[in-house]
Length: 343
Figure 1 (tube, rainbow, N blue to C red):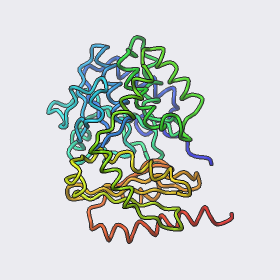
Figure 2 (cartoon, rainbow, N blue to C red):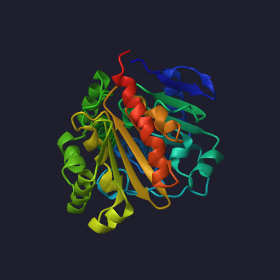
Figure 3 (cartoon, one colour):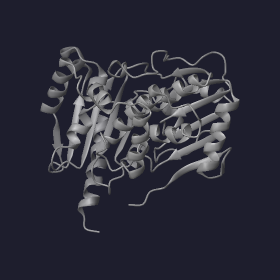
Figure 4 (cartoon, rainbow, N blue to C red):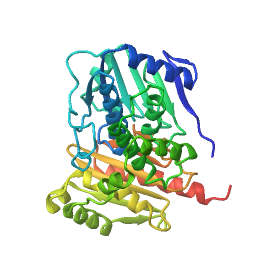
């Protein structure tokens, strides 16, 4: 299925990918201070792209502040370049703000938007189809496996910027967003970038060990409970998982322990869409996954104020769980029926 190639623009003008990369390289070389931001509730690609870029700029002698509204999640604490990560925007406006892996500006979180809007130079680096180009400079590669892959394309033009730490961070992001190279977003170029990062010092088994072989007992118990309580709809094509806050308390787990659940549910034979509904303070966080290319979850998420990719999208909900389910489940069932109906 055809999809848009993305956005390559400067000050609202489409100028092409190479021109945008050249402009970002110029910004990196000429500016002194940077704030690098990624989306709240971060995953491996959010941390990998932003953390890798931060370490690269630091190695070039730049002043860098790395920010994420959710802070540093425990399961990613091992990743290089994240030790100085903070949750608040600095008071001093930097020369340039770089936003990584955010399909929309509001994905940086409510507390960081004012700082971003105050900047005169905002570089938007992403790969989400829902991204409309909110930066003064935009490089949105929809065909890329991950934002980490896009960051590599930029840094490969800057000699000496891809250190072993940078390579490790970027390859971690690629691992995460490709599901260990299992998803349809994995291309020949993805493997070329991965090889280049390994040659720069990234160690694949080291990354895989930390990402997939360090699951806590509390996380395992929480995930087991959620899977046992999952609900199947539309003759098994839609799998719904709900994780109330009481589960975190019961099993001594934390929200990030649910990260793999949506993928686990999607991988069940016969499931076309999985939806994970997690309770947070004052809101519900919803993640959706699909394994049918005919289903566009990005459009569904956008109708709820969220976004993402065709096969993976998310949004937040501030009303009741009952209202959410009454609104969302019919949309998911309709999406399933659309691919079941002969065209």
